[in-house]
Image 1 (tube, rainbow, N blue to C red):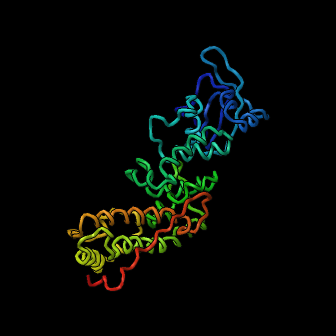
Image 2: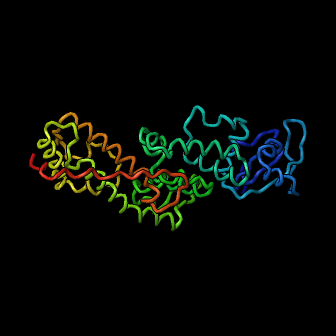
Length: 325
């Protein structure tokens, strides 16, 4: 049994697209203008059905079956029928399902502008620039589920947009075991990571944990800054900060090396260093975060051409004799 779509059964449409059990009556010429693939498809011979044109008479309408889900096709038609390809997402935040459908069908039907506009949204939320990424309120776009990060990985693989992968994989790791089960698309089908990309998440988790430990140890390394006038006090305070983590192993084993400095220390712990050393600790913190960000492809075990990889150095050990100063 076939059903007319409630949104796209246009009374003056010139082609009927059939996706699953849903029929869409739309404009053949408009779709052909956007997509060379659809233009070629429409040029082939198809069954014809007489359908009414207003209240006047019937017209022959080709019936073209496509393999897309009705939900995906509906997203594509909203863009094409509205004719707003170039300003598609200017004033709104699209859902994951919309972005996913537009990229997948945009690739399939060779609608380059649609793919470009949709990838621009992903680049904005999964950037390669650490400062841009860190300033975002969340590692996922507004109203997206955490597990949908795996869909971003799949879209990056589909389009070859490898710069999206580090931020997307980090989000997958933070989503936890949910990525194993995959995400449910609007049509009820389940999307999962490839076995290789699922292995990336599992294998990288321990390396991300190690990176978190490194960030904490180097941030609070007990070496005061050169300008410090209370070196013994500040050295002791930094050492105490590290020792305070003994009863808070969960911080050391956290898979978020980018967490705020306040989360490094147990609740209520005051660092107790001079202003100059406090500034040094803040600088170390940012250096360490950027260092981990630069090494993300290496930590994930993936290749991202053009990714900058700064490697932070451990603060130097104090000169002999200074330890007792």
